[in-house]
Length: 278
Image 1 (cartoon, rainbow, N blue to C red):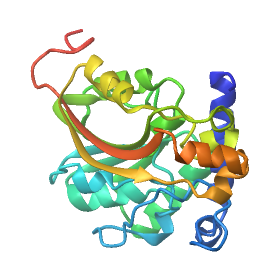
Image 2: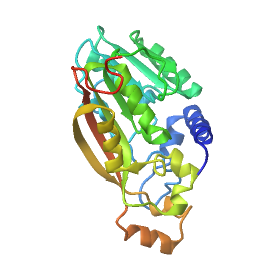
Image 3: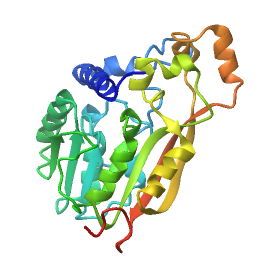
Image 4: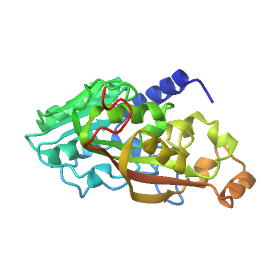
């Protein structure tokens, strides 16, 4: 499609635009059957409204799961949220870790960092901070996090293996992660794979489910558990931007599937993984 740097810059620009919109504009991209669903960014989102710590100003509808619901966060934990956006998952994690813990959100889009910091200040959450940086090279020291969460972000990163290596580095021994992401079973049509908007919308950057799980295994994580899985159906009016009616029908009848998964895994409390004993 493009070089790694070009993909990153495209994602940065698109998510900067989203950060500067209000929520009504973002939500308008998924307005129901018989209406328009002209963008792909919001069609995968789950409902956060019943989770403690939820703040509507921080919810841009960009996730594909509820990783904080499954993350087993304890009071006093240090939690890192990868691709923290406007702060939605970070604030829910803060409710779980309490005043004695700490939450660090990392995002590489300056507009998102600014929005998240403004939300944290408004909520007067002084143990939540947001750092601008690349999750392939986190601005965090090693062995600092009890829990890492992320919501529909790793599929936006070309070097997914590098991210899992960083997660391993940053987690304490005995720490764990809960990550929601988009994966594939079967092959997407070539026109979808080449579409920049579908990459930024978390579809064409997704990899095969088994390859995703193998990246976790090969980076030394234990107790890998699929906590949740749901099928994602991209509406025909979105697919119609890239495929003909015949191509859409062929895609629907193929064995290709797009899935949101939430995966849990642990960094062993003993020295077992790459660079663990360095």
